[in-house]
Length: 389
Ligand SMILES: *[C@@H]1O[C@H](CO)[C@@H](O)[C@H](O)[C@H]1NC(C)=O
Ligand SMILES: *[C@@H]1O[C@H](CO)[C@@H](O)[C@H](O)[C@H]1NC(C)=O
Ligand SMILES: *[C@@H]1O[C@H](CO)[C@@H](O)[C@H](O)[C@H]1NC(C)=O
Image 1: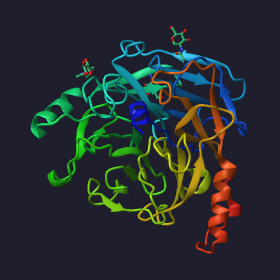
Image 2: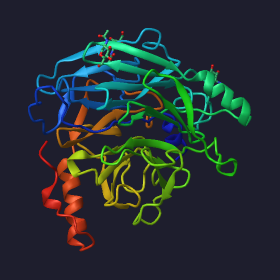
Image 3: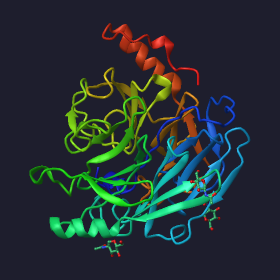
Image 4: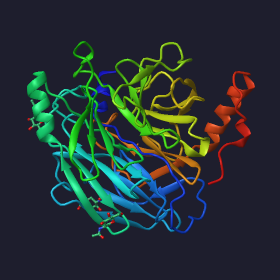
């Protein structure tokens, strides 16, 4: 277990979902497994970008962004001056924002995640953190937010280090939310990249040593920010259009299996439009009870994520990607995909890999919904999913 934890100093990322994009030609359908044929990407984040029908994969090896064409398999490497090839950084979450038709990218400090000098993730919370707002449509960085001054002010006030910018999610008004996994503080960035504190736990609940918020999404249905919390094993939900947008409500999913110690330790959390935003996927790279290379935990909610239940797991044992973990999931045109990443958990160093598989797990999710229905617990007609998009 110790070695495993040592390796665990690595992961985390995420992605959001797809929406029909305005004013752009519809994308041809996508289904089945896809392969990004570039060496040693080690991705933590990925998303589909409907305006140009491309998939964007983050490389934590080089801190570059890979543009991947799912129809031709052509790739292009996008560099960020000062961040790419700089080992202080680790590119994690990649997120499509429908409101702005842009991508948000978390280029955060490497030390919290991967620190060969330590055997615990989160042990060294130092290093630079940037959030990049990128436009694939005109291939330009719109801004790069330096959140370190705000982080440092907060650290001085708390008398403790905080860190771990895993992911980013955007609301319908073009604001972005970046949670800090060690502290559960959430920063908000406005459309110009100005950062402010959005949420901070009460002092009694402040825990800067435990992995907390790991994945999050904003539902398009009701503009709610939903986060997975590894500290309390609950979801936090912020009603961004409500009277108290920064006041969360908390709920523990029903039906977690007995002994599931890593429940809601998500490397990414994604809600699926193809499943009516009733299904969310937590990439749990930490689980070793259900499968040795972790699982994608599947959650279900009928009330906009005010309450939820665990409906099962997609184990990461894909023959397409031996030795890989799934660090994130994403959705493309109603199909759900697991991003496969070769991580240093077994070797203590990154294995050499020729490609990155994107594994279509849509049918396994449909199957879990059907099993739930056959247990007679729900009213949802599983057969209507996934929706055609
Ligand atoms: C990473 O950098 C190496 C060395 O410059 C290069 O050969 C490789 O293609 C890059 N890969 C990615 C995914 O950026
Ligand atoms: C923590 O990480 C920083 C890089 O941000 C590194 O310079 C420093 O040596 C690390 N600290 C320890 C004690 O390993
Ligand atoms: C690039 O596109 C974004 C929207 O995607 C727009 O806000 C920005 O002004 C564009 N920049 C340039 C230089 O065209």
